[in-house]
Length: 178
Image 1 (cartoon, rainbow, N blue to C red):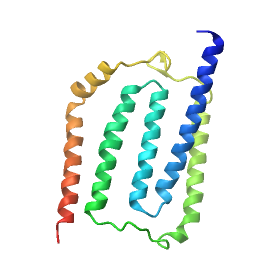
Image 2 (cartoon, helix red, strand yellow):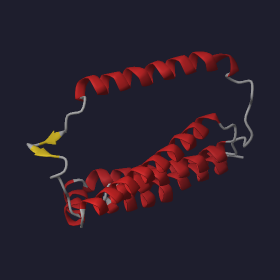
Image 3 (cartoon, one colour):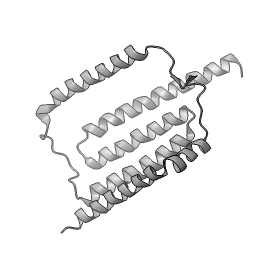
């Protein structure tokens, strides 16, 4: 591969990253600003799908598939079941927290600025190293990830699945009280 071809691929990845990042930010803002709970859950699907696309750009296909299966396929469906089974109002109330919005915006901008300053001050433009290896040298195969997940972390994995089942059962019980 020539240097020119490698540069074209890098530029294409940067453009794709920018487009996906903008879509994620817009969808994340819509998650917290929409008045309809179901619409917020659907905007969350866009955010989580964008994160999976970013994982694909990072060549972490296994993580992208897990993102789609677990978060979009299970968590968001659980949210939607919870919303529908508890009979939450689908429309929003426009006047609920109207007077707190300016203070919330000031705090959000201040927290973002503090976080950005702290990260830039601590890391700057240095390359991160993990256990003496640069991030470019780090790589984990799908077999290593699955061995770690199903050997080392099997009990926490099962506890989370039981917790999700309990949450769904609780939503059904709350909905059936009448």
